[in-house]
Length: 512
Image (cartoon, rainbow, N blue to C red; front, side, top):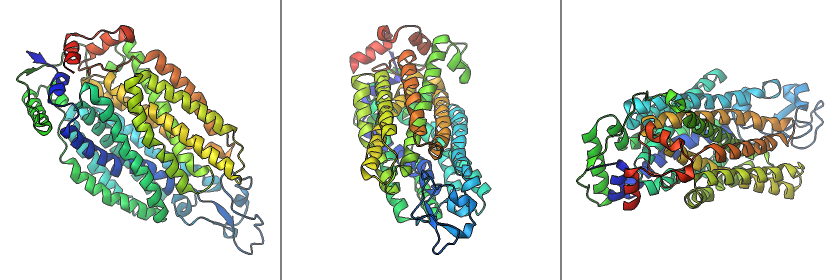
């Protein structure tokens, strides 16, 4: 009797001690590597407020000037000696004087990190499917660690930018591939828990980062901290296993069995005496990006997944990077907005299991749009504490709801794409998210033109993504993981609500 990996996991533990250990290892990668390098931009590229120097005969502006003040550009017509940065932290803006005509370089130098991430998703998607998940993760973590040490020392903006691009490439490989590995060792009923709990580590990292940045005001010392932690992350990745699904798809049957036996031993359940089912491959399956557009229905799923990831990422980082421009204490703002991701992770699990993946995404988009409308309706008088508090609360609600959608997008995409092209499918979807992340910095920059623009763009995109997801993404709740493109073609050819399980899938559901 042959059975699928999902059926075996349902008997030896789809979310036991082994999966929890893997969650800790993958979570440490996210905490110490991916999340740190993603959000450190907020502080190392942040623009401090400025003020006139004492007894200036040219600068007659009283008080502190920020990015939304009417006098923001007044310093551009003054000698550099007549004004100074008023905050006590340093960044690439203060070191390389990225103000006035050079202010756009703030976003260019920061957004190119996401260009690297996009490249990394595309490259490592193929690498992980060719050489294996574990080797791809080790390669990504090692490269990130090396670049993290190099970036601490450069005194030229060009060298800093190149290092940030390379960091994006390697971080993307480590982050995306480790997520795939975690999901592929999870059972049918536990994928949402395993795949979503990982984001708790990112939330903790973001909140810790606000404290770290408050204590360490020199941007190079912040980067030095990241370099030290990257070494510990590299040591921990050595204990990660290879994906049993990857081994099976690549005709390494005995190794796949050994990995599953190890899972059983850790979870205290014996490996059943059965033969693992070999995934069926169809003659047209090329194991590359062309498979994502082989059939009309599959193409709709692919494009809908891309749009969903793009919007979720753009909204997520517009709210995150824009937190320091809400008024009040920038470190407290960043902490509070990051805090919103903690309950959203649990909410995502509940919503996607109770209402389904599609409804969880659409609901999150709707709430994000409503919160954004309220945010842009609040007057921009930064001196009024009530207005500032209102904007911060709405930013928290927007990020909370969008995070529900984003977490669910990860799960539904990992369930839609089969094992043979799962890394490529997730890689291309994540690449679209990186385009959104890249553009987020420029959307935040628009606050210098009008304070309503960033959140107005968020509203329009949330509505578009919500409709696209509801219309074109099939539901995957309680459906076993697809191992071949043939199964996805069958899924796309029928209405998701009427989609029957195949024989093996029916057996899995019964056993669960």
